[in-house]
Length: 179
Image (cartoon, rainbow, N blue to C red; front, side, top):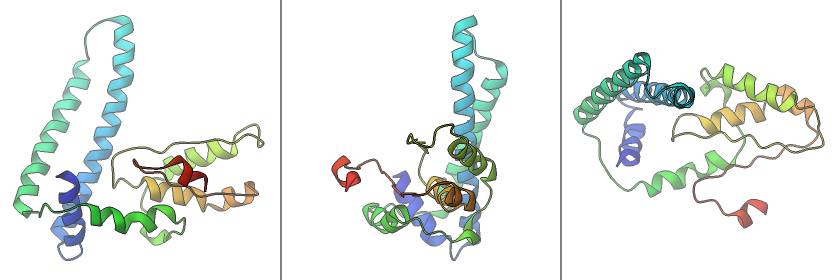
């Protein structure tokens, strides 16, 4: 259901700026949720070593996210999104995922993440060994765009003699990947 709503929202955002703003708020919230979950996992690991209580700061963050989710859900109902077949949406994304070309005019933010990835790739002490750096997260957060900006960065192009673009989805095939 969530993917179908996102599909409808992405189509309608071209004509409706309110929907475009709603999608931006949703993506911002997804980043925030991801960050809080990372913090929570780290804090949980520390606390299980020291005690059995979660900090009030973390509890407040989770409560704040729940309130934001409620607000986004309320707004979603106001827009009356269609819940249809999402398979067409994934077919249209195939070229976007498997092609490393990128329109730089559509990239906003993520400079910190881009720099970290480039530093990790170029900072590797031994160029002879291959590195795999997974970029994971929920859909529509810009993982592919981030990977493409790194792949097409001038310092990466200059550093590596050969580069290969591979994008794997949930239903990837190892034999197809090797080809």
